[in-house]
Amino acid sequence: MSNVTLNKRDIDLFYRLHPSLMMYVSKKLGIREISKNAETFRKLPLEKVNQFRIRLYENTYLFDQFIDENPYHFSSENLDIVREWKRF
Image (cartoon, rainbow, N blue to C red):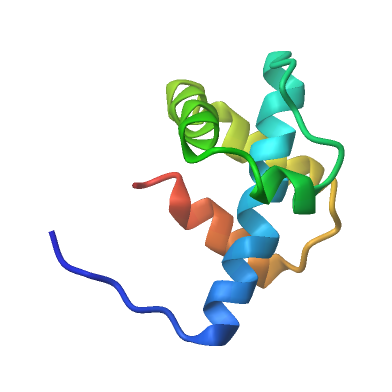
C-alpha cells in the first residue's frame, strides 16, 4: 500500500465532503449516533466513523443517492470526487 500525501486544499476539501457523506449515510440507514453537523461529526471516535464507512460500502447505492440528491449543494466537481470514492 502506498502512502498518499494531500495538500492543504485537498485536506480541507476532504474534511468538507467526507463528514457530509457520512452524515447522509447515517440518516439514510437510521443510525442513531449521528451528529448534528459536520464539525461535531469530525470529532467522533475513529471507530464510530469507521462503522459508518463500513455501512456505506455495504450499501454503495448511497453514493449515487447522495450525488443525485446533492443535499449539501456541492459543485459538480466535488460530487465527482465523491463518485470516485465509490471505487475504493
